[in-house]
Image (cartoon, rainbow, N blue to C red):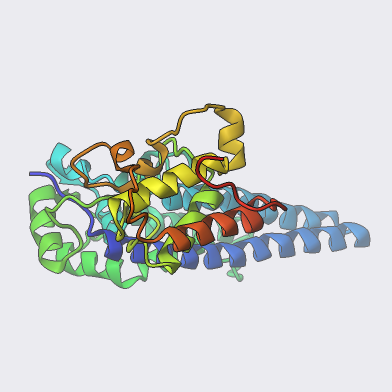
Length: 324
């Protein structure tokens, strides 16, 4: 059996996680800048020994911040695949943790996450503490706090849920989790489901992300769709209204960049289907027959075209109409 994220819940949790991680990263970047400033001040004073110490910390924090910038970008753009649950008898606690945050565990395989284990944080900090004390001639001092983002994640309610359910060993390294046991537990708590969601495919989108987001926002504002951006957009109007939208985008060359890169005289009916869930029995182009009744939401769609021309493309002329 295949398993899926409940999309709205997962999207909300992922967004919340990305925002919190970005805020945590901001603190680490400020710390990095502070070390750089202290090093420059001590260089100006001629204190090379202290300056070298600050530069050492700066280098460590700069590498750490760079890794987390990559990780956050990967989390934000990851898909919603849960094939891991079908493929393996056991999963790591980090993979389970990702699922609770609405993040595909495949993100851990991306650049920036290699050898990333929350379970190793206590042991790593112990080693780091011992090394710090040794470098300071075993005189206990204030060790610069490190792995702060990982420690924040270990303190989240989702991570604590996993600890409560699966426990930990004495050396702080967690055992892998039986996949079927995790599935049963996650299904019960609503972190995963068996119904396949309609998720927007982020691979090879036809339009630039900013154009697609503006189009989504305008359609949502006019109640022509009823879905979040990262879902397949549910079309709420008539099928011929959707066909009219596609034709008006084509006639007005929206977005300009796509039409410049893909010059064509005939209408492209596929681009919009990357974003909108079309459930009609016939091909979308077959609905471009408006007859005496016209298009149900013609005025709303025209307003959207006008808005895209003015606000997105800064186009100073009126929109073109069908047949021009």
